[in-house]
Image (cartoon, rainbow, N blue to C red):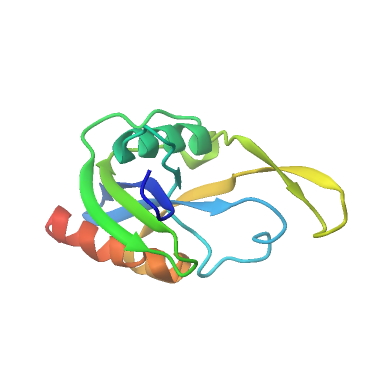
Length: 155
């Protein structure tokens, strides 16, 4: 494992009525509950020891959405998020019904330092967005992935 924190994720995309759309997820839990603009992101997660980034990206997609990421992954490169985590991202052409997602659950202490734990979905919702809308909705540090996807998709 590299000495830095590495995650991997997939930016699912499709074309509808000639427009490029991307599939983003909204993180679950009380910290993100009231946030919309600047909160959405690609499904992603940590690359485990001995795991390659494309494998991790597919595993995280399955865990966070309940669907397999089938098809050819196209590398979008690596970005660094504001917290210091690196994300190796891949584009994948496909389609998915946002109403059908099933996210895994994680445990967290809430409220902080209370000693109480709650279980939250890693992803509480997902949706398709045009590139322009995605730019407003997405975490600022992940927005360069949209530019890279546009170049890859030839828009």
